[in-house]
Length: 125
Image (tube, rainbow, N blue to C red; front, side, top):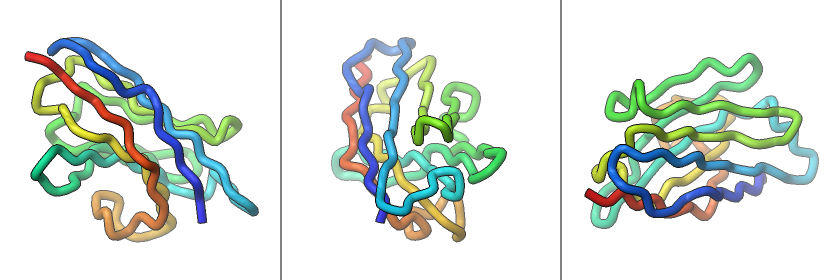
């Protein structure tokens, strides 16, 4: 089991920026061997894929709705993954979750075994 803790959420105006962080820990946990993902869930809606960064050198993948605006990155020395969010829109309002994966499909929530508690991002219009 991997423990994940998100931080950095908040309230911003449309067009603004936020940087989310996700700190990973766990007994016998090797962060660099896990792919990491960000998902989000708005009230009354299903959880949706946002971004993924693979293990190792860290190839990245993004949902079409955020591509060009969001950037996922990782610092293996700090056991931390980040999500830089620019040009935020009201439709980005959601609880953002960090998740860890070994194998599976990068955009499928079912492939991720560990999840954080979430951090709220609210974008005003």
